[in-house]
Amino acid sequence: MKTGGKSIMWSVTALLLLVSIGVPLLNVLTVTLLMVPYVVLYTTLSKKVFAAHLIPVWLIAYFIVGPAPLIVGLFFLVPAIVMGHYYRSDKPVRARMTAVMISIVGIILLELFIFDVVLDLSVIGALQDQLRAAANQVAEQGVSGELWTSEMTDQLVNATVQVIPQALLLSAFMLTAVAQYISRKVLASQGVQVKGLPPAHEWRVPRILVTYYLIVLVIQLFVPANDGSFMATALFNLVPLLRFVFTVQAIGFFFFLAHQKRWPKGVPVIIGVLLLLFPPLSLIGVLDAAFPIRKSFQKP
Image 1: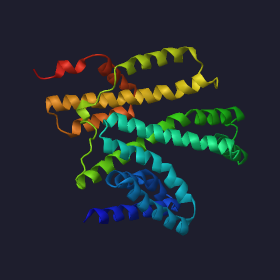
Image 2: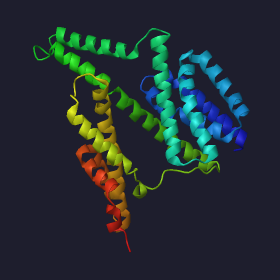
Image 3: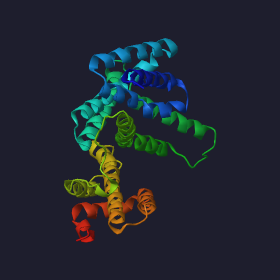
Image 4: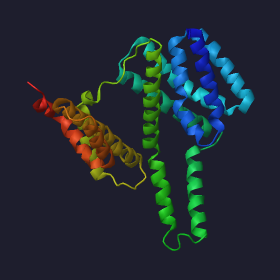
């Protein structure tokens, strides 16, 4: 298939993904994959040709299902262009993924700001109202009896709001990782070589993160968890996020051991699953990042 045919194929793919946004359950997969055709087209085409492919796709999607696909399509366009730009300039993987994640988070925050200031609609406030209404409805139906109180409803609402930044960052990471992996494979099949993530046994996080983690843990000792302050919310999200980072470091450590000891490939995978299931084991990653443990296992 010639380059023009492949471009049309990916334009059709983008159209199908946009049209499927309104399909329940399927739209979850759609959102996860929507950046891929944008990234492939932007990386392989000039900017003018990229726009020439994109505009008809959006117009057709608009006439088929209305303006909703355009809003979602515009949302994912910016991070896709950022990823495609980094592909073209052959930037390091860490810088590429960081830039894409920042662009996703930035767009979400911008949309929340626009909804709040321009449309006078607080998305977080609406979420709080829905949670309270759902809890009150359950209580009124007698399902929870006397076990559920208004204080417990407030705690549920506050806990949900506090976890929003963490969910936002993890969602941005997931979307970035999926788009990075699939688009890189597609581009490689078209003869465009793009740097991928290093092998799992080479995964390392900056040692400075250990210092940040210790500082956060010390501050957490002096800040009440439920006082509703900005610091409490920040700590509520930072601790599990940093713990997840060091879990990844621990997974890399066991892949390193498997690489050095020539273990069967399934062994580090099973250990990695256990590490994800038991967050306290992230301490292994903290120790691996803080001290040169791996040197003692390297072959002379």
